[in-house]
Length: 321
Image 1 (cartoon, helix red, strand yellow):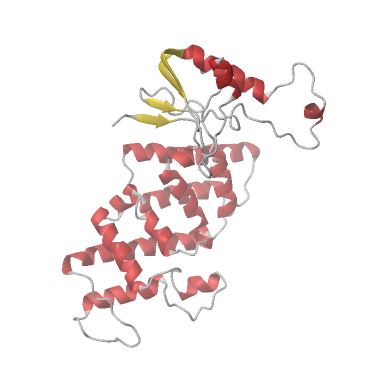
Image 2 (tube, rainbow, N blue to C red):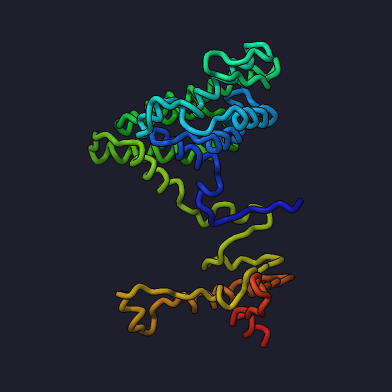
């Protein structure tokens, strides 16, 4: 195993926990589709909070599929989304009722009313079924609470409480959630300075938080003592033993500017105007000067579609010359 890190990614792209946390702010409008809820069960922090483990998650995944759970908490929640309230089939309430009846009733009992019990549940697995029920109840509770607009101070309390009820993060995961908490603290401070006392709905708050915690940081995960994958940006001409340049194709590098139709600077360029192609040529030179022992350059030589030859970047051709 070779340790590596990927720099220049947005925080939400690197941290699934943070991305899920922001997604929960859309619970009032969520369809609670089975694959989505099961993807939340993959989070270790959520598994710890609801006393689950990978084996339990796999069994729950099988139960959900075989018991017919597809989407929707219950008929009332479907009604709020504009669907016929009388229809509860294939909802979480429908599937959980089948699962609990299957555990409580002896095999071969037949229908209970109009419900067919799902009997593939062994004695010790009943605890996992109870944990799944608890999770759905907590999500449903927060679906209702998040639908009510509130002031920023109240939103901060809500989100911190929701994190505590749905997640039990370890030290590393708490670092991931710190970005959300800090963005909330900053928003509350800015609102106080501006004298803003109005209410926000969940979608507006989510959009703001996503814009804050999703900003890519140039220094994040750079120079961590591992193999680093990163963009080529100015001022990274730091000596390295090995520098690898990947994807150096003619169509990919130097990058091509695609100016807007009303960009007069691009239409009538003058000396001193910034040129993306010239910047890329300079960055290529910087990276070559940074390599101390090995400079590795590669490009895709043949098309994946028809195996036709593909040209290397002009800067590679110039270096070979």
